[in-house]
Image 1 (cartoon, rainbow, N blue to C red):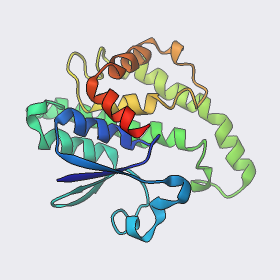
Image 2 (image 1 turned 90 degrees about the vertical axis):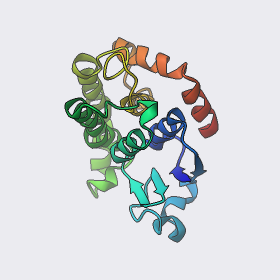
Image 3 (image 1 turned 120 degrees about the vertical axis):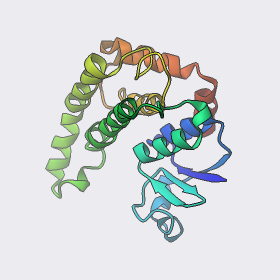
Image 4 (image 1 turned 180 degrees about the vertical axis):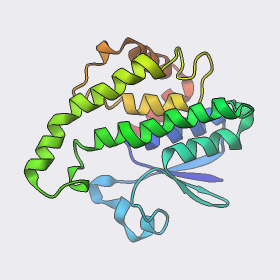
Length: 205
């Protein structure tokens, strides 16, 4: 059985929702970041990066959300969480999820994890001030050019949708007004109405 390691408020929410949507048999274990559990010897033996999510499979441990979402979609093809029979369309799914991972998440992380990129306190403050602008720009691009609607890829729900839902949930804390992003706001509403999303959000609360 699959085992997902997560922390509330983290990007692990996307994989958690995808597993639920896929009808997978899995267990989920919460890590307590406040007590630094992600850097405990026990967890570092699972994921030396000391981050979440991690997905334990019968073939080993997977990390990084885009990889995990692709694995879930491919492992449970009957759930139709990705266009597995269309190489170009599947690459588009990967491109969107890679953008969320490599650009949007990194922009958000500058608010609270500036120590990853700098050593001076005044640099941390400057990075934090920049977050509303950078996150706003990222989501303006998603709104304008990437979110086809009603779902990310158009009429069909895919693993892109729980990932976008997860990161768009950070906008208020990053001082980005979601009302300026009507397609993103509508997407959040649609996602919030899905039974799998409700179940996972309740479990993580």
